[in-house]
Image (cartoon, rainbow, N blue to C red; front, side, top):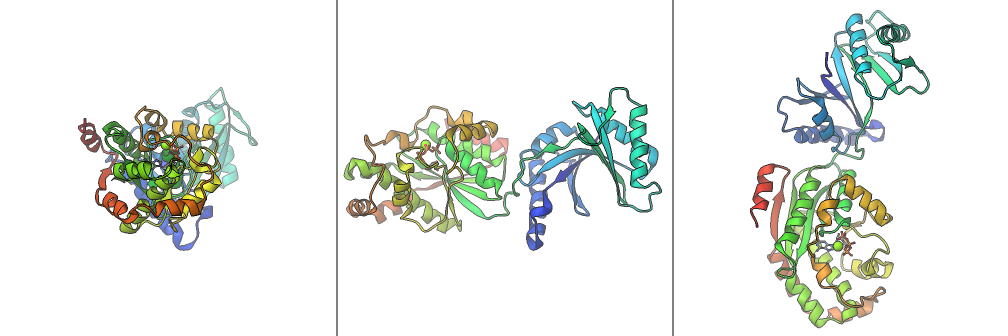
Length: 400
Ligand code: ATP
Ligand code: MG
């Protein structure tokens, strides 16, 4: 006996009408892609249920992969048997005895196939007794059991499931449109990307790079971060913007206190142009209110003025510690703390204004040829498609 299925639960309460179908199809597709390394494993849908068919594969690595797919709220290992009393009892015994940290259990039978001769209540008793008679270390607890052995008797077969394993939750990536993630090499923006993905949003990334002040390693770091994010979704296109000239002009020509605000305004303008080209409907940043000078309410107000795009700021209300916690969980933290400078850390004005006035910013900016600077930067964009496949990884490593 062994677990031959994984039952996928996707919190369908929130789903209505047309979205429901789209959601389920996308989820199936995303799980399939995630499990591409296991060609024998299949993802199926039958009568409102989604299952991963293991076809002899070890469930452990497959469960681990499913735990990185948004839209799965929980999952359980399952055994499929014929609608036969003895087989059902044996499978229930297997489910109980292979589950870890279980002292108490309860059996819950759901009889959907009304042709099955034993009623649910009676079947609960029959299986419960079988489990107690054939083991010594378990007790029944109907109110708060460590494990609920669920038995679903359907027309085509019976499914017996063991422990409930929590999933990532959220919505399947690809069901909520696309955003352009402003991806620095820092701790915050990858977490912001992850949280946007959690709501079903697909991402492309934009990174402002200022060679030779920022090294190839800083760029590699961003590609590595993007690759981590692909583990929770699909391929991520990373658009690398040559930003040296823009930054040099700003820091040469603009008053020190306003340089930061103006630089960030340029970033948003370039991002907006790219969004139009790529048909992307929003920008996402890793900003968190009050974290640094550019993230005060006044700064955000002055910076945001240059675009009418919706800006998603998933971290806006999060404390740094909580952001770090997420970054550790999603394994971006160790990449983010690599020491290579990014363009913002190098061109740091001595005393950035924490309350830059819009009029002043506009006045100073008017002295630069913004259009030309933008056009040149956009023309120089290099786009790298980051996939989760090892061959692409090799390609990047060859850069150095
Ligand atoms: P992070 O940890 O994401 O770098 P931060 O705390 O360093 O954020 P800022 O430097 O003010 O904060 O940047 C705020 C946001 O602006 C970042 O989260 C990111 O979305 C965007 N950003 C900053 N620098 C870059 C860059 N070089 N390329 C792309 N986006 C950037
Ligand atoms: Mg940063």
